[in-house]
Amino acid sequence: MRIDKWLWAARFYKTRSLAAQELDKGRVQLNGHAVKPAHEIKPGDKLMLRQGTVLREVQVLGLSMQRGPAPVAQALYEESADSVTKRLLAAEHRKLNSEPAASIEHGRPTKRDRRSIDKGWDSRWGASIDAGDSNGT
Picture 1 (spheres, rainbow, N blue to C red):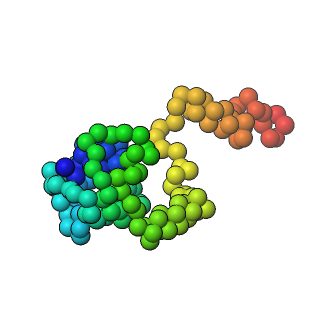
Picture 2: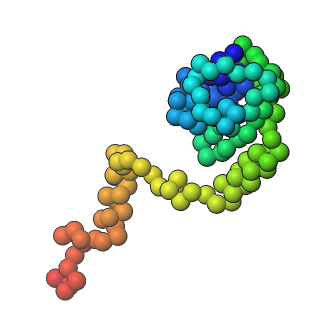
């Protein structure tokens, strides 16, 4: 069975093309070697794959030609105990320490945002002629 099909069937990646891209980038290793998407996989092989920032080590237990429900997909592999603890620690770390850049809004302000910015500017500074003169004239 092709490794990209297995990664898709085991629900590591949402589509087979995403699995193939990750294989091409070298983010998935089979028995310690980077492989191409068409490489054959068999039970007993060890995979090391990265999903985002998470590094997972799994052993192939079974093969499936179709993508099934999650419990069936989880029966196709066994994750190492070391990998599970590292994944849980990374999740806890992400939960406790949020990324500061994630709170920054990107892009141009919308028309509504621009109006609220302009409204706040006038009331805060009062630099208009109608506001009056500080000399009492």
